[in-house]
Image 1 (cartoon, helix red, strand yellow):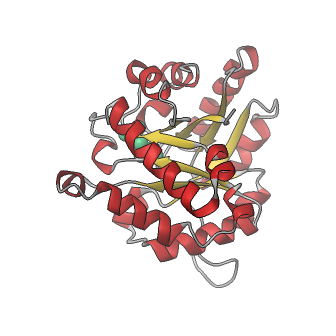
Image 2 (tube, protein in one colour):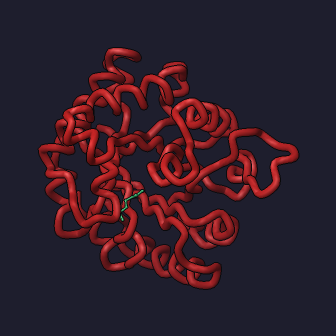
Length: 252
Ligand code: 13P
């Protein structure tokens, strides 16, 4: 059985006090009522990591960052390295998010470099891929996703792939209220798993969790998660509301 995961990407929301309070209320919730089927992961801004790490001591919630530097250490003003993230107690880092690709011009090569650094620092990577609207409309979505895998991920060894969770996030569905239909998600997730199988073999492909992201909410999560190749979700807006996020974590 593959691991099921529901990860909340808080993006650039909540100040320190708000974030700690919110994490505390989720910790309390999941301590009393653990999400039976899913690993819950919180991905707050960097400044929350160390504090939240102290709060989530019961082990029901894991912690991740939303980005890391593309170098290990040194004179890179304003950057936060994978190793620093690891030292907070976080176990995951989101890389390749479409907002990083679009607003900060991160390309597949840079994302690949960050991915290797993160893995070498002992972090698991939530590796995001997905096409924009015009690419889907032009029927290019499989090609785009194939390229993102090939150039961003497929330099990893089979052993390193064990440290990867893929998140398929069609960019046209992020924060737009438009969700991929469960069938569209399944079609792409199956395609991704096939690419991984071709490159790394069946055992590796079978083990790899592939999450869906893009306007996932309590009203659509159960149907999307019911698809055989969908192993959970990477949640944006709905991860900022306790009722929504906990409902999604229980949607399997
Ligand atoms: P929304 O759930 O707000 O569409 O965001 C998805 C996302 O980008 C998660 O990384």
